[in-house]
Length: 239
Image (tube, rainbow, N blue to C red; front, side):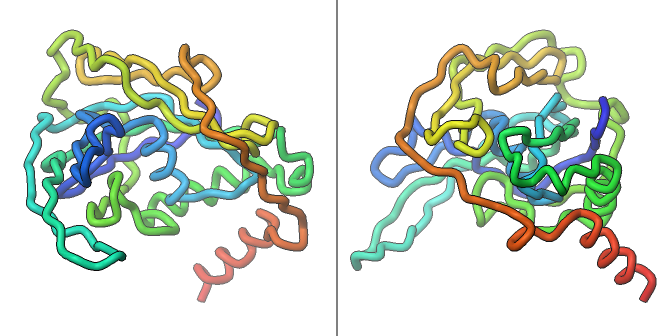
């Protein structure tokens, strides 16, 4: 796939919260990361408003195991609360993603240098990302490094199909859909021999509005061009 990156993603714990289980302060993880969670992870590797990342495929390498913990969440109104959070234990995934330009942002046409964006993304992946990686929640530190998608043996490689039922696919933000609205997308993923092939956001069968929202404006005054960023990174490497 053009402009693609492939990498391994892992950590000790993950919490990809199922919103239906988020009752009374409790949190229950999905069995697998959502499209939106993976997109956020890729954006932590490298992101600019000029581009939009798309998650192509996810390969589940370790068995899906869960662990519950008693957590004391911060009560800003005072008091003390105990809640149970259920995490994924020792998650490990192979991820395939690619980017395209955000054509809903004509204000950023000056920053559309495909080759430089791709080179910076690959460079950022080699050093573990430009920002910290979190597996669904801030307390779940994650790590990434380049890795071929199909290399290695996964736990579910010959498992057949696992139907996960309806779950959140992701969020539509106004700067990516061209209208002043935020929406949530739903779908029903299937794991086939350890691999989930994600549909595109516009292919999701169910979309629900979350409310009105305006896109932030970007231009040359508040966005560093990819050419300038590339020169800065090249200078840092030569020092």
